[in-house]
Image (cartoon, rainbow, N blue to C red; front, top):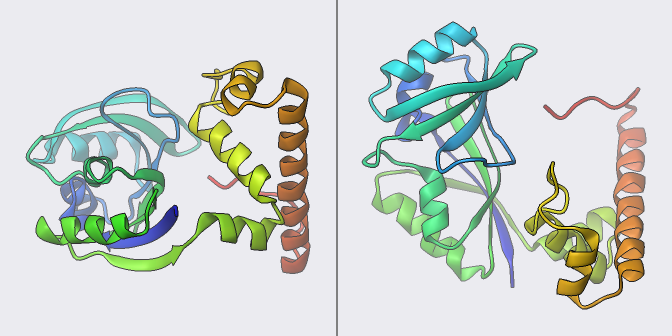
Length: 222
């Protein structure tokens, strides 16, 4: 059964350690659409010039190119030295998927999904074997979590998961609704209805959560 682990570890122990040492206020967030074999990361907490300088001086970074930015944060395409510790590579080597990754105040937080819970233990030991000291903050079954928190049915959950994994929500889309429905063995109409019901459950749950917090309105998650 698939499981998700939220893991924290010191940024100083990873490929960006030198950069965080140089810029303690740095905030880093993984770009969801990975467009190259390098790491595509949003960086903020310093000027673009300061960030670029710190990246260029870091011993673990081979290449860095600013490919976007604005609103006091900048998107960099970063190539790490093959000898450095790249958490993303370790996750991939263990058959996992990085769902989100961000770092602030010198600490990384990764949300990683594995198909089997036992793989998380192997991943954890792999991190320890390269000298890292990870802390598992949270470990849970995503299906149960989505059912409890958002009211999704099992079918809705797996439909959304398939759509995300196959790139239906990316810009531009990597798969059409017809292609996705063919892969899942359902009609175009049935898939459309499943997605709309899942959207409704997610939006309703978010409205109820926001109302409970007394939020005045929506704010951007980034």
